Image (cartoon, rainbow, N blue to C red; front, top):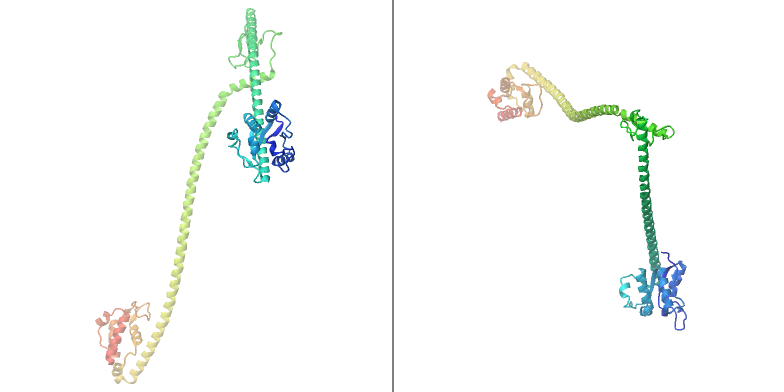
Length: 446
């Protein structure tokens, strides 16, 4: 349906003009009309109130039907008016959208309260500017919905027309099919009569143009290649139906293709076998690749472990080399100290020999009067009776072979310390032996 107006305005004239029919300055209805004019919203509005009676009812009904929606200006006067009530009922019957705009706090008319109470209203008196925006937004929304509805209705109408047209065409096809069937039956009857006459005069067969097979003259198709014969094929020169060369060429190619089916099937079987072999080879190659990959991974893992072990061994070797170097240094120091001790002992021995030669008669007494000054003298003395490859001044050292018999004789002759071989062997460690000899020396001194 095409609409003439966007909005039908339902209001009370008492809110628009005074008792002398002068427009009330600054009234809400005038402001709303100005907003509609500025935004190109078309509307029906009983501005002059010149209609009455039956004529007014017809005009109101027509205007509401030609409008997209109804704007109800709710006020004390409009809710008391029977005309606004009638307009609202008419809009509701026509399924028009009703938008209430409250310009005061009056309650809706009881006659139509149930119709518009659930509707959202626009409050004009609280904030007119916001009310104008809300009103324009609501009007535009209704207009968009109507446009969408019209589109859907137009689409539905076109679909119904298309369906009706299809049904009409189907009926025409049915009529034409019946006519074609009737003509085909007549044609078949005539062709059969021709075949009977051809057989009577001796023309009983015809040659297939596709596979060159000889078939009965009444055959509709070749039972070898399946080609369908045109009506009246090979029925005299004047009445023979012409053949489409392109159609013949395609049919011959198809026939040759049918003969090649066996060969193609054999080729297909061979290809399937090769495909299976290739798949098997591919699976075997994948397995071998995975095996090689696993071996490579194991080799890489073993190589990493070997590298780690080599690093540990190199570190241990470096530590051992450091220890050996330290031991060599200690050994060299010990050799130096041993040489120094031997030189000192040789010097002492020379001095003692000179003293013996100068006074042989007093040697025994002199030797018996000698004594050790400290434990170091004892250690040096005992050291001269030791045979070993690794000696140190550390008193805990036991890596030495002591000549206990010679040591016992020397202690008695030189220092007048009387001790036997068993007592000396009792002290296995070198520092214990030195302590024992030192204690014996102290006893003699006392």
